Amino acid sequence: MSDINETTTILVKNITDLFLATLKDDVKDQVVRNIKEQMTRVDLVMVVREHVESMLTNGTKAFTFPSRSISGESISPDGLWIKANQIAGGTYRDFESTGIQDKATVCQVTILDEATVFENKLVSGTLEIAGDARIKGDLTIDGIVSKDSRLFQDLRTESIAAINGEMQSGILATFRDQVFTQIQTEGIDPSVIKIRGQSLIKDNNTLAPTVINSNLQRVGALRELQVTGETLLDETIYVSNHRVGVNTLDPSTVLDIWDQEVQVTVGKLSKDTAKISTPRNQRLIFGSNKQNNLAINTDGSVTVASLNIGEVNHTSAREIPSDNQPVGSIVWNAQPELGEPIGWVSLGGARWAKFGTITA
Image (cartoon, rainbow, N blue to C red; front, side, top):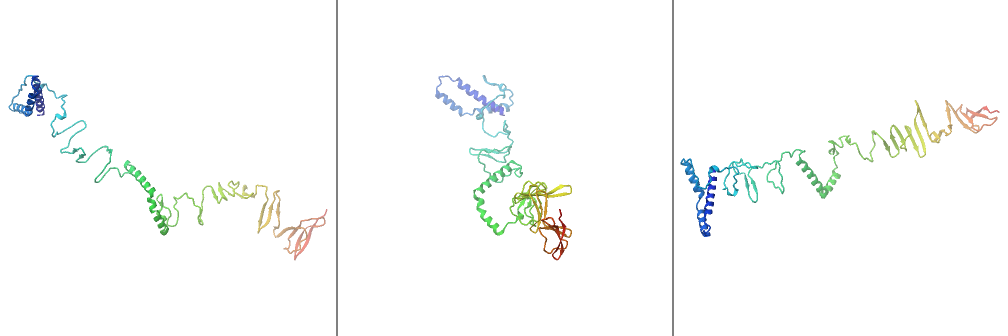
């Protein structure tokens, strides 16, 4: 039937053009206008269609085209081009084009000047909105729950930036005084403060083991203290590499003590032998009860004010003693002369006896 409509339209057009072309040049414009007007009142398409359909319905197999017309067999649909505005409107079923495939059974898209209406859901591989977007109703986006999704990452970044901006603009300052006041009056539970999932302070007042770095400037009495690595206490005691220095950061022995210019060291001299000395040109004094009991001089000599050998006490004096000392105590003569004794020995009861007369 569509072939008949197309053929009829072409025939009508050819007949009209042929009729107008054969009009003599001297026909007045008014006659031409009258003829055109009369022809517009006649539905030539319908007349020709009815005539063709009548011939086909009555069984006529052969159709003789009039002179100077185009036979239907000579018309090929290949390359036939008809303007869209020459096609009468209506519903076209099973419509397909290069970019459109219509499988709908009812109208699904309505195009208006002010909007394009989709009657059902819109499925798109990629959705890009150049202007503003307004969504009425619920919005469900697959993948938004995943923390790895791009939308989630963008929302988090934008949210953090917005929160920081609001906090900097004064929202935090609005509640700061209230929070500080509550902390001062009610305190804060350190157990709710967590570091890497562990409470900062445990129930037994124990600091969480995750706290490995701090800048403490004052602590109470420590029951135990274990330090690994270089240690400096009050810029006085220095410990490192199995050595201890007092007032020095470069101890030369296991214990190196400095008191201004005086240096005393304690360490190992050799196998199974310890040594207490001053490596500088200085005297070394050993004393008790605020007395200088034993002096080691720079020349290597040793000075002893009072020496006990067994139960016998040894001292020195420039003249014979007169005090009462234990029996057997020896006082060496500190100013010996010819004929004088080397020393004196106590006989008890403040009695002294000479021994060892000095002779030439």
